[in-house]
Length: 222
Image (cartoon, rainbow, N blue to C red; front, side):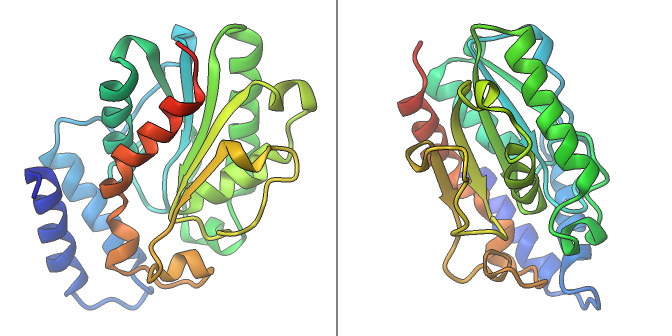
């Protein structure tokens, strides 16, 4: 197994073994923080202004650090770099509290608006960029909510949507063609069934980084 994935599963197993009274969200935070210390991968990305050929607007999961987190975002970005070239990818994280309350509310309202605003900014500031909307866990909720706030001209600029551990799994985007959307949800991930329980499956979406990057590659033109 890839050393990074082996480290991830080892960390998730040990952390999930610890007792908790908040349905696993504190364990999610602990694992994300541990990974941020063990990896040379920043949980903060602010690259929208670079106007690269592909701009990824990414919303992190509940309790994760920075604006892109560590559990799913950075592995996905690395896979994208390999798939289409580092020089072609710009990543912009969505600032929002990523609190448990926001998840329980169906996705932080302010974060959803921020995602929509960043998407509009990318469309207007970077007329040639191809926009990818992506989110993990509560971040996927923000993608659903934020996309609903976009006008038709901005939606037309969205080339792909990639979701990981989506609590709204199976819910279509009314304004985005289904062929542009790819959702990664483990069958046994309880968050994907819109519950409030975080288990080991929900912490392991880095294994889908490669397939997610290949999906984006199939949608963009370089």
